[in-house]
Length: 552
Image (cartoon, rainbow, N blue to C red; front, side, top):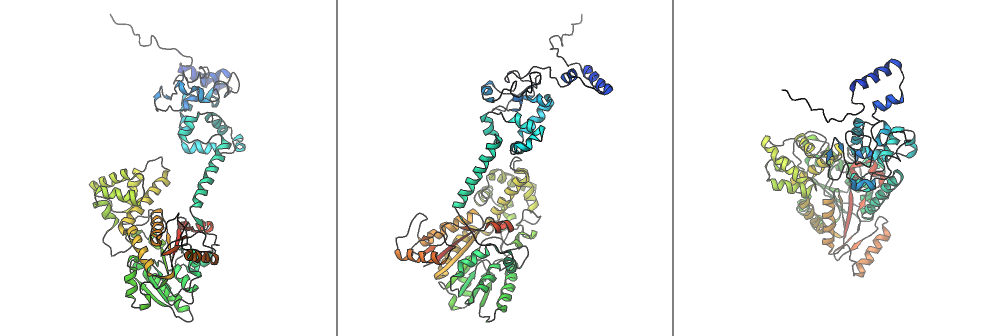
């Protein structure tokens, strides 16, 4: 005897379960061209019970605003986000009352005609940070003209405080914009206190005249000229010639200049600068400047000055020295040099083409711990462990041999939530910086060179350094303090030195705060940064910081 089928014995029968009934409603609407209130109730399941404080929220009851809010533990039940009763009291407006147009209208999300499917769509919108921030940044007047967006704001705004903090939502609309604006102002003010923004007018025409290339402009040109303007500059050394934009301006601005020494480790930049400097000198009426251009790293400044063979350029006789630590646009824009994250090229990154170490060697042969140290210390990359692991794993598949190979790896490793394209590009920029610093031993070279350059200065001579990232600037700042044997929080007791520094500040308006020491004076307690206009017209100057020290 066969056993009776009891599969649907206890199955709950609900209104609207009959698919044929729904089909008949659509056929009737299509045939008659009209729709009744009963049709709407049937199609959109408005007959279902309204929200009861999230305690009955389930897939069978989508009429609940709280379904949007994920619980702290992230668990899901019955296909929708569920909330525990602990948060019921902190929900704000009651979805069953405050979010209903009338007693007969549906509750919660069904104010938009939301069913379980619509609930999930709105849930996805809510979980999208960009959408949340965007919708809460719209002005109320605009929202009133957009009924759907206005309704979404009304639905999202009653979230409890714990979830506001969790998802970083800006609510309410007015106060959120004000709060964000105040935070930005506070952050900007704190940043301004750590620097002195230049108040010089940015003369684009003058900068273009000093530029050999239309794509490369000397950074903070007016500010550099100010540093040396009140000196009797008979000898000047440019440790990083580049396109000779700064040097040509200094030569033109100092008729008393007798000796010019330019150094660069890049042969292409050296040849270009040599031709430009010679052209500038030839145009002078007296032609009294003796020019030496050397293909040398600035860490060898002392031996380079001896190579000139002129006794008047020995240690302790130079009136002005400039170090521009930024990369020239000619280097960045040449894909074959491997410096750019925007172009495919070999993983080279050598400033000196004669050097043996390449970025490719670091990625494919250095120990895993050393690769991680480079990314962590030189790139200040927070995701260095994961990158280190993936770089070493890539060696099993042949290694990394081009910038595109490295960029593809970075794109795969960078978490998707970290700003999309901008997120992985910022990570790539930090990785490329780390590799470039390691290949060229930039930080150690910089520290050693600062001491050597200061030794080469004559009494009253000045050393100006333009840095472009925090690692460089930190070294310049600390080395300057060590050179003068002073501290940023100390005031020198030597009245003569203080008198000298006071006289300097009176004569030169660009000097705001100084630090006195037994061996010298730091003329920029806070670094000088480009003017707002220069940052706008030359975006590569945004991170530039100028620090100056004078020998006594």
